[in-house]
Image (cartoon, rainbow, N blue to C red; front, side):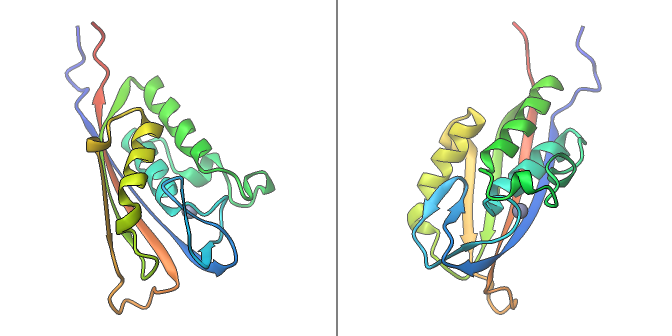
Length: 164
Ligand SMILES: [Zn+2]
């Protein structure tokens, strides 16, 4: 008998990183040609970090920093795909699957439009869902004073895994 309390769950994640010259720029696991990249925790993949937090938040399992502390040198330069995979395994253990994801990136440069489909495809494949289940949107900061940073907001919907 199914538990009536097991309803779909939403998760929300937010992250930001500062641009530093001369390092690779990775967003959603995709390498994007640019003169600077995102510094900070691991490879600085702002979208995958926000996604990880959204996934963990959906099952109230804490946040990325609890599992992968930025103070631990082990995660310096790490591929952020590792964080998403860990969150996915927690979700699977909890009996949920990803229904869909929506995201918004806020950055002054580079333009995300030409890379949006690659990001969408990569995130979908990472999550084991179809590209049309992943929204990738981008806008510029418009005077917010965050031109030297990239910000990502991600929302996910989890659905219960139904066993046949
Ligand atoms: Zn981050």
